Image (cartoon, rainbow over all chains, first blue to last red; front, side, top):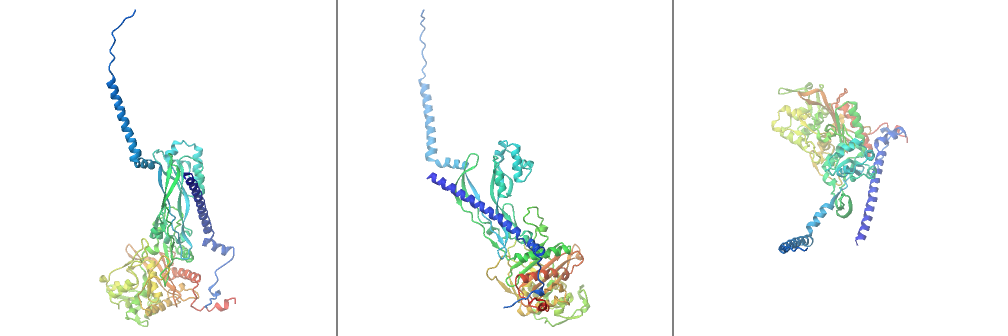
Length: 65
Length: 572
């Protein structure tokens, strides 16, 4: 009984550690995602690398259903 | 030869012997009795004492709820980190070689001397943080050096993905993860969750050898969805920052409300701070000025004074007022206009922002009614958002008013308001006379609202405010191509040590769009522009125009004004 408890307990701990590792990885990836998706960065990239700009109001046609 | 000596009588020790035996037996009985008592009858005592030395209750930190914008974009999130702590008692006893300490110092990013000074010389201490909230991988490397007395502990670190863009509203937590400012503080109890606990058995070195049971599961904190829109917030932050820099202003605030629901879509302030770098942030920078700072609204109050006269039937939109060449005497005081406008109707009074005209209209209203009117628009009344440190503004009691005071109130002096309160008052004009409650969190169903003004007066004032945003008005620069805009400028003298100054101003613009059916209300306030221009129509109105233009586009709000050039330029 005691032996089984120990065995299961170590299994729980192992799984918890795996879970923690995933948590950490998730946080790291979220951080990276945010870094890459910063509006300032995207705005700069769109303007300088892709040559995009906001359309003039006169160039926008709005359609009303 | 044999000498026989008299036999010496051996002394009789038997009594002593028996006494000793008796004593020993008694002691033995007492000891056995005590042992039996402790082991069999009162075993809880020893068990408890043993547990005290070997079983500890360890907290499991709960995951703090996330803060998001209205569309679920992350504004604040807790990520797992590790803190390195040292037990100096073990550490100092172990006589760690200098090389190892240097390795440890390198891992935690401190110098060797810093490490030693943190640990100190006190051999009785059992706990000191060496480095808090570090990258978990690095922390694991530090503990894997195998130095006695060095441990890692799991914690959470608060991270603010949008940085300074929404820093003021979102607020901050302290290093222990407790809300300190802003929404982090206002909603701390629901964000925080409940820490769990587990029972651990430790060995003589206080290392955890067995995790016996989980006493409570941690309850994670609830997520909080704010009412702001991160896309608009970014645009406003960018424009406000550049305007404050361009006009060399002390500070600036910008708020935008959804005029129908009262939800705050933007709340931006300058100067701003980065909530992710844990330096010392001075309150001058961290203050959410849009809610905590008061200013006199100046001419942006005029629409309310005029609305009061119209609502009570004391004037009509076409009522003609003679502004007496721009000067008006009230007792010993003088009310002046910048220019002399002569005879004007009510709409033109607002268009030209005439102090004399507004005063004349306001003085038709009995003081009590005038006070009630301003009061109902929320001046001097709290916003009831639960935000820590929100200002309620000031509107003095009408009992002490002189005619001159009532006149100055009509053009926005002698009353103070926060930018958000002013925006709330403008929602009444935008929303056909109904004021929604201001909300900082996303509303999933309709909030409460109160009727303050008749639909007729509200739309009539709105029509007049549209004329302000024109060539003849004071705020041409607030115009947004393709949309009708209504609004009012304010250039307010700041109160100095000796009365009002004529060198320091607040440049203000409050307005709404699209004017035919307003959806968005915005207030821009720039404090002490000092690069030359200081008029609300020149400093604040362009910021309004740029932010409003992008907001209308992002929110897909249809244009309500014809763009004559549109057809010719369109590629189709």
